[in-house]
Image 1: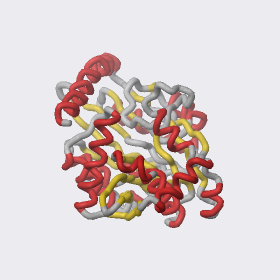
Image 2 (image 1 turned 180 degrees about the vertical axis):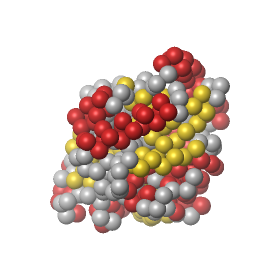
Image 3 (image 1 turned 135 degrees about the vertical axis):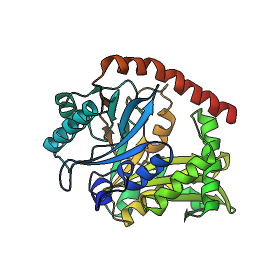
Image 4 (image 1 turned 30 degrees about the vertical axis):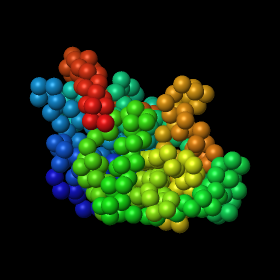
Length: 338
């Protein structure tokens, strides 16, 4: 389905917009078997990109990735959007319709409850908490605000031969995938075939919604970072390193370049990406990345998490029982491929 005129200006580029509500993301998912529906609840906001798919014997499910999108502080608009989406689930006899907006619980919990959504047992997007930097200070002030050890590491990168470049060609995408695949094996998370990522990354870069930077030592890529432009935020979406990056402090120099690049491009805030919801939990797999990110500062934000409108309760419970086995099979396939 073709996006309505002005869709991306509202869904992706308005202040609380998100890449995963863009027409570029819809096209990516349609090539993977989903059906995109562009739902306008208001003009220009709220809006919601709804992705539909048949699963478990032809049962219909729907997902609104990181949506719906509303204007800043518009709780009435959020309630109106969620109510319309719950109605849509009933009209289409969906097993469920899932939303997972990047909104804090204090803002979104009551509209979700009032419109009939319940907390989901399945979070599609793994990020439920983040650190967010205010980019209003000048570059010198941002650097001075870093943790002392982090600031030292940022400055060490160039001294140890690290250079950072923005790349968008196929060679750069392949290099990033190699780093990402290595990181996946080290951290034990699911990775897909290179063609999947290259298609996604290419689509978002070409739509000017994503930026890829690689850090090099002696012309060899040792670290990579993909950032997304989501409304007035830039989001540190994906990072990857190899062993040489640790020795050269390349990851610190690279993330700093991402932050400064976002400021120069006019972003108001920099989202450092996923951290544990409980930052005291040292056994959380995100605790290591959190130690790295917290040195850059930022305010802790916790998202409300995925919620489902499930008009067919029996079918919904059956899906919840079957889905974990599917995810386990994906994880096993990723390990065998690795």
